[in-house]
Length: 385
Ligand SMILES: *Cc1c(COP(=O)(O)O)cnc(C)c1O
Image 1 (tube, helix red, strand yellow):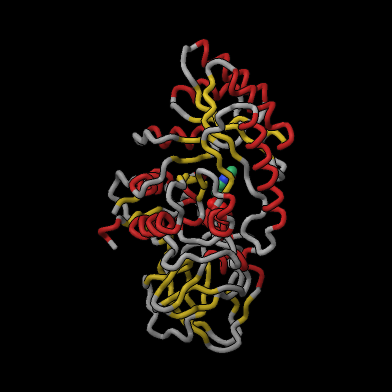
Image 2 (cartoon, rainbow, N blue to C red; image 1 turned 180 degrees about the horizontal axis):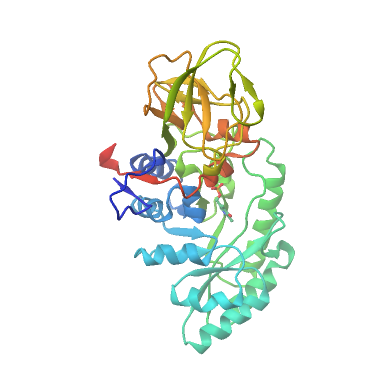
């Protein structure tokens, strides 16, 4: 067991933390590998600290389980992997400033390139240093974000392929809607990507690794797998939507826990929390949790619940930056400093990232990435499970 907050002192960690089960993570990668067709490369997306679970820890498990490459969005995220001694291919997605290029070269990163000026700047630098920069051409097939529009993709790919110092290693695009029931736009994007790949091949250029799918595409669009998939959410045990295909045995890796800081009785008519949002309808037992929206928990008012002794305890009142109150009246065995689960499983009950997303009015991705750094991360390795 280790925690990423790096307790070099002997102070106890606060009683609120994100537990990351690396054994389950390994199992999820095994199940994904078993589900994937032979020869399909797995790219593990570990941007934003692997959606809050710890980039280095998740990356190591991914590589152990046969992932071929890692993908991140920012130079600092790539540097963190290299600083940890990870030598696997790292593809830096998104757009680069010219001033970032020297570090990309020094760290041995593979660059996503979506336009000619940055390709030319990268080429000049690589030539000056007598080195090569690996590049994946980024094609916009309908996301409307990064990359060259699909109908002019050939021009960009030709440029990258012919500029000295650049090595064309791949070509990719990104779905804007892959995990919903309606796959019509995903198929439109797939058609555009296929056409772009075909035009490049007809021009006699070796495309390298072609990739289009995120987690939703991996699950539901096998015809779009190409050579690699880029998956971030699914290995963490969270399905991208309620309607996408399920893989039996994949379970969430992260559990958000805290402890009951206070357990006490309140009287009929007593108020709880900011703004007088709750007034006890009778004598109740109150529990106070030492975390709130300042930790990334949704800001809720008399909505949602937590798990105590395997039972659901409703949230009462409006929670605060550092505290959340729950009704323990129906859980008489609850005592101060008992463990509480806010996301994850306890006994037979489970609170999913999708449940929290509904209370927060957002998506599961934002629930995971919203857990703040002041919540220590406790990594359980496979043996500790
Ligand atoms: C974040 C991201 C992914 C991973 O998406 P998941 O749905 O988490 O699998 C893949 N590709 C790109 C370009 C991304 O930005």
